[in-house]
Image (cartoon, rainbow, N blue to C red):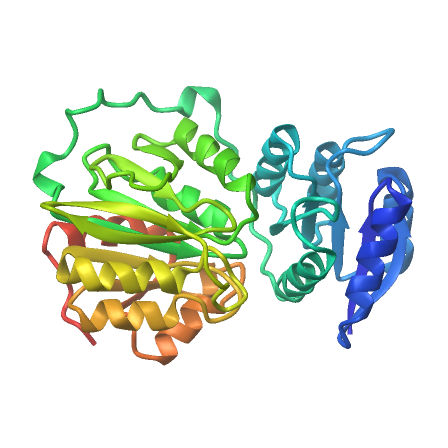
Length: 350
C-alpha cells in the first residue's frame, strides 16, 4: 500500500484529492495538512511514501518547503497546482528543486475524474522513483545564443526526437544543455499538463545554447531549435517540401497521455526514417516503446536511458523489451550519443 500525505490550504482540494486517491486499491491517504508547518509534523509522525504539495500556501510557500524537505527529509513529491502562469512557473521551479511530477489542480479545465486518474498514476510512479539531486543552474552558466540563421545548416536533413515522463524535466535539461547551437531540429514530448509546458520550455530556453519553445501548429523544425509539445495536445511531424513541420492536434489519449510519445515517434518514423535519432528517457508506463520500435524499423538510430540513471525505469524498459533500442545508455552519455549518431558515426546495432 502506498501511503500519501496531501498538503493544500484548501479544504475542498484536500477532500477531492483524498477521495480520488482512496478510490485506488493500492493507495492510502494517511493524512492531510493545511500548510508546510503542519505537513512537517505529519511527515515525521506518519512517514508517508509520497507527498502531494500545493505551491501557494499560507505561512510558508510550497517552494520554500520543498527545498527544506529535499535537504533534510527527501521524499517523492508531486506538485498539484492550478493552471495560472504564476503557478506554472512555480511548478517548473519545483521540478528543478527535486519534485518528481506536476499535476493540474481540480477546478482547472480538466474534470475531477481526469485529475484523479492522472494523480493516481503520478503517485504510483512517484512511489517507485529514484530521487535525483537538483540541477541548479547559476545565471553565469546561461549560454549566449547564436543569431538566427547562423546555426547548423549542414544538419537540416536530420531530426532528433525525444520522449520523457516522470523525472523527464531534469533528464531533458541534462540532455539539452549539452547540445550545441548547431544541433539538428529537435521535437520533444514531455508528459505534462497544459500551460505547464510553456513554462518548461521557457526555463529550458534560459539554460540551453539551443532555442527551446512550446510548439505551435505548423511550426517548422529548424536547426538549433527544440519544440516542446503543448500539454493536452498531440504533436506530429509531417513533410512540407524539403522541410519538416509539426502539427498540433487533438485526439484521444494514448497510454492515458496527451501528448503521447508514441504519436510523435510514429509520425517521425514515417517521414524521416533513418534521418532521425531518437531517445526515450525516464518515465512510468509504456508510452514511446512501440513508436521507438517503428523508428528503429524505419532505420532511425534509437537510444533508451538505462535503469540506473532513470527516476522511473518504465518507458525505456518497455522499449528495451521490444528490441526497439539500439543503445542503452546512462543519462550523462545520451547527448554525446545523439550527436555521434547525427554525424553518421553509429554503433553497430545489437
